[in-house]
Amino acid sequence: MSSSKCKILIVDDEPLNVELLSVYLGDAYDTVTSYNGKDALEKVKTECPDLILLDVMMPEMDGYEVCRVIRNDFKMDFIPIIMITALTDKSDHQKGIEAGADEFLKKPVGKFELEKKITSLLRIKEQHDNLLTEKNKAYYYLDYVGILVAVLDLNYNIKHINKKGSDFLGYSLDELMERDWIGSFIPNGSVADICSHYEGLVSGSIKPYEYCEFPVVISTGEERLFRWYDSPLLDNFGNTLGILISGEDITEMKKADLQLKEYAEELERSNDLKDLFTDVMRHDLLNPAGLIKSFVELLSELESDEYKQDLLGNVAETTDKLISMIDDAAHLAKLESLDDISFVKIRLKPMLEDTVNSLMHQTKEKNMEIRLQAGSECTALANPMIERVFSNLLSNSIKYSPYNSIITIDVSELNDKWKISFIDQGDGVPNDSKVSVFERFKRLHKEDIRGTGIGLAIVKRIMDLHREKIAVDDNPEGQGSVFWLTLGKEA
Image (cartoon, rainbow, N blue to C red; front, side, top):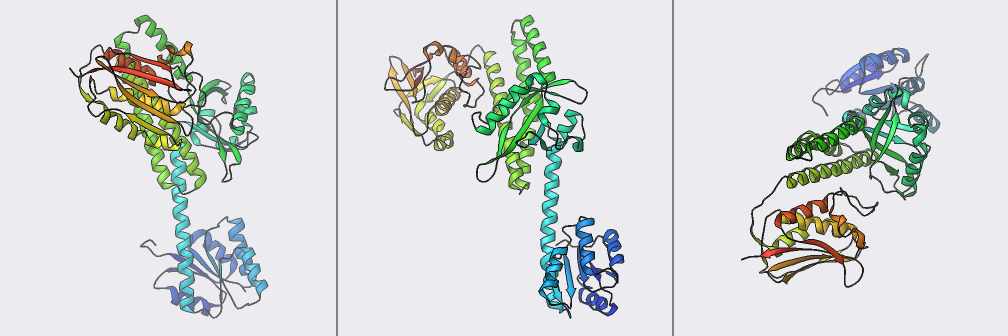
């Protein structure tokens, strides 16, 4: 408990009983006394006791009525109340429980038993108070995360929304609760698409966390475009309880994007623009995204409520995806500004082993086997950034391959080159996409695969800087693809 003394309100119409209890508790607790029910209720409001010792049999207002008022009218559910009574009938105890009492003591009260009951109930109250404090902290931080977060029931009524969301929409929290989300905030022209999207989330035909863009109508009547990351809310048995929606207002971002494209055309995609874009991505976007991630991790450590942990998990996963997109885009912009790179001796087998180990958690999730076929003396001339090529190609193979499949990484000789092949058993790449798959934002319509669409563009740019080949063929041994590249051997 805290170093300061807890305060106990003693209520009894017999002064001797009050005096006795005060003597029992005087050394360990601050005591406040009252001799009737009405005065006791005033003391509850003015003194804010941590625990109440309440006599049952009192004139005008008995202990049952006092207890009911505290629980129902004052809405004080977590002030422990111990009823002290000479009544022994079970029906009297039942009546006390219904009124909201936590414990009963029979008169005359023994000091040891009294102290034991008080200690136990105050410990429970302290735990509740701590949980309430942490919950309030969680709500505080969630309210000031810079995105709209709301929970919809299966009829699309708003059950919860954070303060930032109410600020975005221009209504108070009370005005938003239980409102029909679609009927109140979605433009008529978008209703059918949004209903289809939500129905897909509930049925499972649409995977959670994949972003979509829908407009909302705010209090001024203006339409604002939002980017949404939505997911179903499930109970412990997998039943859908509602939908978690989280969105960011990208109206100004879209306008800025159009202006940026116009500016890019004027500058003919100059290196100056690439440098500017890289700085914006790394500093103006990556830093705030990192702060959101840190706050969510802090909240996850503090939060004990499973439902709120799920909400925070959704926010964390979405933030990780955002950071990955920013990092990939900035990295590609940086690569495109390079003309020449330096080369060092690279031992291929240890680097490939490190790559496999770094993605081991992904392979375990899909029960996949990675087979590395490389000799210990395979040494190439390459820039260390080649490790990102290996990581992207292996990650790509894992994403697009089925559960329980095998991915083979083969290092073979090709005249004065090493040929490194990543062989998977996935769906393969259509012939008409074997070249375009290395262009940015090309993902072959794999709607259930999460990614930025930039990974293979980064691979292609790094291989161009190496002046080496990168290509994809069909797996000659059956279903799947072979992504392969060449690297020069050590001279």
